[in-house]
Image 1: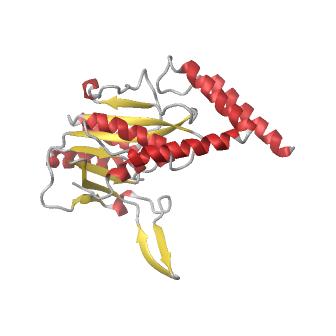
Image 2 (image 1 turned 180 degrees about the horizontal axis):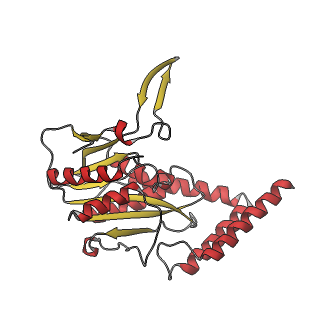
Image 3 (image 1 turned 45 degrees about the horizontal axis):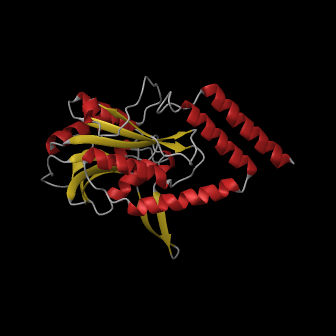
Length: 286
């Protein structure tokens, strides 16, 4: 392996491998934060060489100051951990989307998957979408074999051409190597900030079904309920926001039977967004 270093002489075998990366394809931090919840008490089994994968000007290290002194530097990273969830062991990959050497990282992941004889490779992602927070979070799946999907999973429909997330490239590389792969994508309202708990909850629920594992989600569900109430209050306090959310609801509800993942009709969407921005601008000038 060129850039992946093992931190253990012996690897756990035949475990599912779940991965999410911060960056492109992680709207509102939904996927990376969902994985962070899984990895809280994990033990690192492998790490990638950050110096070879990151441009530290675009992915800058974070500095921790205390009492006027620089105490630590936290570097962008990609690491693989062994974690225990509901009495079962999993492999969890977390970190930042790399700037460089995507193909080499994918090849290293294939090699690691062979050494660990992983059961399957499951990725989590999130995309910003013209959907309201008042509707259930929609999650769609991609899979190397539709037979891998769990009950209730929704396969990405039709054809879609979009800019790549590194994680999707890695999943394709593993699939081409004969490793079972599944990817879940949550649609996140484009106007919400980080964190968005309802998105995390939706991904964790789908992951629970995929792994047939009772992942604890009580705290996430409570946070999602509280955040929904806060968003409702904010929207209710502004006529323009209330009208905008209502228009999104109408567009999404009208288009739900047609498409499970693609944005609502482009012309309608552009018209609604332009109208909202124009009305907001006029209100500000007044």
